Length: 472
Image 1 (tube, rainbow, N blue to C red):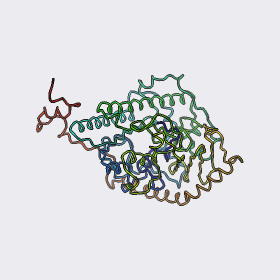
Image 2: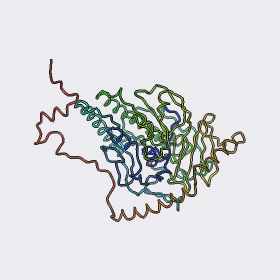
Image 3: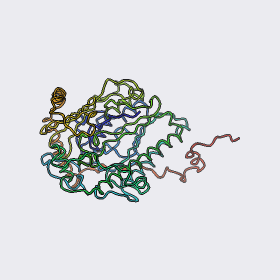
Image 4: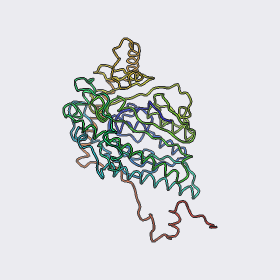
């Protein structure tokens, strides 16, 4: 089942993932930006699935910020790819100033192309290896009589920028295969928020050639295919342990990428290329098809609990999503909405999105409202917020935003946490406390063949499928 209107709830890595893990909006859990702590007291789907008898594992990126680097996962088999501390804290008191050390910039686009290895491919190859080995271990468990259900999150960095692909994947495409952006705007034509993003990523004043744009987009497509191969590796491992037909496989992402559309790059906005994400489900009980209802990453926690046989009684905190299993089974769903919040860099105020039916409304207190009819205008070329034909819808959305959010209070909360985190980061840089970056535990004295083991017993334990005791 392909969900054609799935959205992240905040178009930035860490906040999107914390909403995905908790099933809660980022304003509810104060997960504002890429340096917001994900509190250990927030229940996640990993907690709930473990309580329902599942063995759980995270292999790869989740960008957890804070000392809790597992958040309910029983196993975590790789480190993360990004820092786990408060280093990447924005400053809304100086929201128009770039932070050069970690803000996106156009140099990343200019350096796009191919390479034998990058830190991203090193990481993703490790994530694939560790996830595949964990799945094979579940096959070994089953052969030994342990039939506990499992949930594995294999989380790859690609096709995230930098846009650099391995040659084998780069060469799957030619320049002629790569479409250029469909709709671009100059800095002067942008809405105020998009102009702030353009300024923040240097796109307003660092020009790109058509060749540079094409090279970045080609590398992105190549890395999508590279990611597809990782999905294939997971499916192959499930086949090898004879669990594919008993497993629901879900493919999704934490955000999209503008890739030059509207003159923008990366994410950090609520236009379709940035905020809409892939969401595909396959497995027992899932029918082939496509679902047009708007939904979001918030909906995955209740979906997982539904699949695992749990109920709402399990929840320790309010959950903002709903199960997508009715849609996955091809049934009707009366809910057709996704809610988004952005409280990170390149804005001085929270940005809100409501996608309901064919309409998408975007609000930020200092900016004019934006309303797009995505059926009539899929490229979001025309803001119809001032169109008399949409006056009733615009007024209704504005009233809903006022009911849902206290923007000034939320802004004050965001700025208070930023100030606190900047002070804490300065102290940590000076040597206070412990480093939070996750270091996967490993006891080499118990691996493979060691002196205290009978090597024939070890060989039999590792061999999968196991030898049958009686040979014919």
